[in-house]
Length: 475
Ligand code: ADP
Ligand code: MG
Image 1 (cartoon, rainbow, N blue to C red):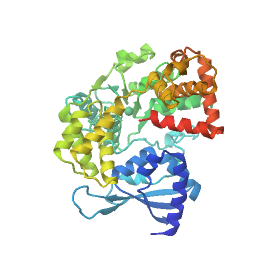
Image 2: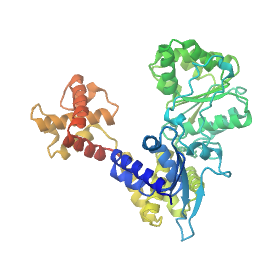
Image 3: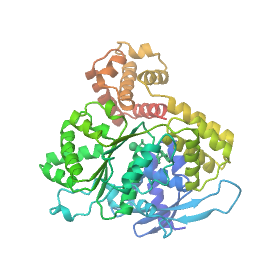
Image 4: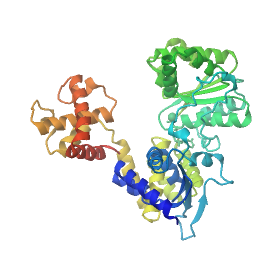
């Protein structure tokens, strides 16, 4: 134990506690133990690997802010993973990351370097002589073909991806478009292709980028007046992977620039890989000339995995996390969580978390409890109706009152809160929110959102409403 480490960590915890929900704090921060402080690197022990991954995925920002406050800009966080066998009472063993027998993944993800404080792509445009610049491929090495399990639902997409990785630009699958619903593995496969190519052809320039980020970069380049550099940068890439191209819908400037980049790459035998949540025929507001190019290669669909594949996915995930679970529980999970793989993984994580924090064994009844919550929660689509119901219940009024024309302050506030949450938790437009909450216009909704934002910074009681309701409305 190291006192300096503890006091730094305590300060971080105080900060974090004020900024996240109490339940989350209890679950994810209380079990962490500060171990030591070397220079600007704080080592903390976490209960398991998934725990660490969870922190990295959900709380890395706040950890970074807290730690930077304490230790300055060069702050680093090192995780030490304490592995517990959830079965029997085997001695826990401690695994330190990074260490030589770990894959690069962990040593890369463990430190919090400045790079992630500013997660922007290393700006390729400001550097002259761009050809000499080493382009970071932005790939996530945890996504591989090996851990992408094959089943009928993904056989074509997975095998086409492997074929592309073996011969980038050299198959007729160019572009390769992987499409399918959320959580079915598009991003995973897209990375796996890039990772495998980097492995087989280290000299090739591979770049993974989300369509959203691509769009931002493009807009930035227009602002800075270096659109040509932007195009040029993308034209020297050998394997370009663009995730979620549906995001380009309606963005004609970005589509136009992508069209030029695409043509150049394609003509030069470079590989393009795209993912989308829809088949090309169903994509809206994407220019025809671009759509027709999407169809030049192969469009491969990812479907919902069948029961057997879900069982294999669960088993593989448990195996990688070093957790054992009885067969009947695995089957129970695979049977009941059938919407997509991400949810399945989420349920496994909750189950392991529950069991390791509460020192409960993983039993079928615990699994049932979790699945019940999970399925209920994820099915509970947050609709505007639901939001109005929750807000009205909270203020003990009925929905009609909330919608009424009255100017009574507490009713107006309830209505404004409902509008605020409708904006926050649904994709509905201001106009549509207004029409559903007491037939108001979009300006009223906009005003409501502003008022709620203002009041929640100035009025403590009001902030409490917002917090309570946020809790009730989030999963
Ligand atoms: P999408 O991009 O389609 O929304 P992701 O690629 O993010 O989905 O996948 C969601 C999660 O499910 C990821 O953690 C991914 O590793 C996992 N996953 C999806 N399909 C498979 C599969 N066939 N085998 C193993 N894991 C999978
Ligand atoms: Mg994705």
